[in-house]
Image (cartoon, rainbow, N blue to C red):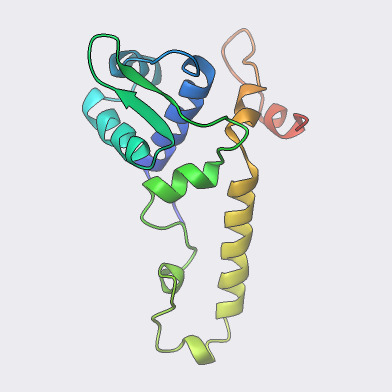
Length: 152
């Protein structure tokens, strides 16, 4: 499993919107500049998230984007499941119904299923709110262990 640029950028944008755009609409250009993501690429990501109804997008002079849901209710899994083709550890688990001809006799399948469940549960357990509790140090860096030590 490898998370694509689209998935990583979508998560960064959602964190940005959770931090800065809960009340007001944020302009595409503003998000693009802050996240250093091209406007064209960002437009596609935001469109996906708006169609999925986790973001609200408004056109026009005072338009922009903002979160539609509370950061307590939006998980990393919610975001990645919208932006990634698959996060399954093996191809045979990409579809809801395993299409592999060997599935019924595959001795390794239980391992991959359990890993898939662990990945999904782990990503679903991390909410946007957790990212908001971490504050960068003076250099703008969040220590590696700070995220994991925050209280939920």
